[in-house]
Length: 108
Ligand code: HEC
Image (spheres, protein in one colour):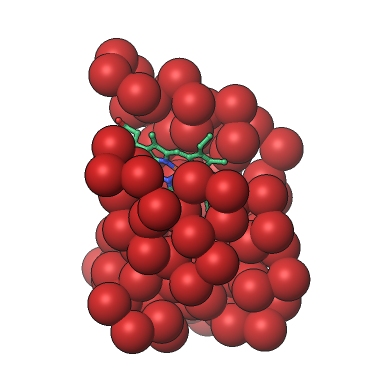
């Protein structure tokens, strides 16, 4: 899988154990800056302003990152997933880590 390439040789063992695409360290402040395009649906602090959209505040960062990677590569489909495919297609791995760190840091 492509994100395994991020692992330096010394971390190969660690990456083998933690097989989630969450290797890049997320930055909360950067995530907040990048969340402007998400706020319309998920709220400025991750509390959705429409009951049909999920709350993100306080969710586990690793889960958020996994979900965003899945939308991006089409692993989540059906339902409203098409909306999120559009919003994740341009996100880099670092964007995903930063956004996940930001929402995880917010009070639910
Ligand atoms: C137009 C509204 C809209 C925008 C803008 C939007 N989302 Fe979403 N988001 C949704 C909807 C609807 C879902 C539920 C999709 C489904 O059914 O899988 C969702 C799901 C998610 C999930 C999965 C939540 C879970 O509990 O599994 C994450 C994470 C997420 N969005 C993050 C983001 C981020 C980060 C952005 C900005 C880059 C963003 N969204 C922009 C509407 C939106």
